Length: 73
Image (cartoon, rainbow, N blue to C red; front, side, top):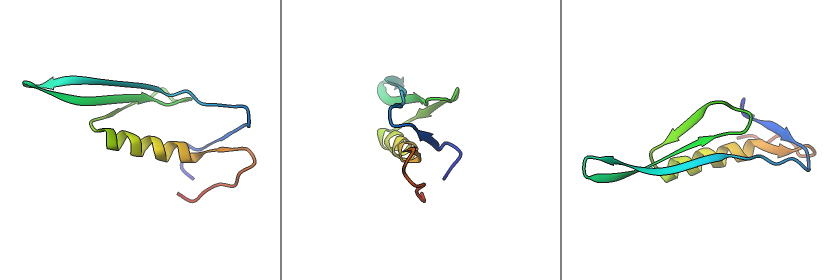
């Protein structure tokens, strides 16, 4: 279990603030994203959709219902 893990009650949910945009690197548009996790003031930035989805997947797996056992990640 990592430091981001948290036990959720059965009625609890989490809200993630996800922002996706394009910026220009010279003449070409470049994909960018940021995410703000619940209970955390740090914004994380991503340069590819794959890295963003990997990060969110790992984070979501650490959040578990009250009655479930911890998982080895």
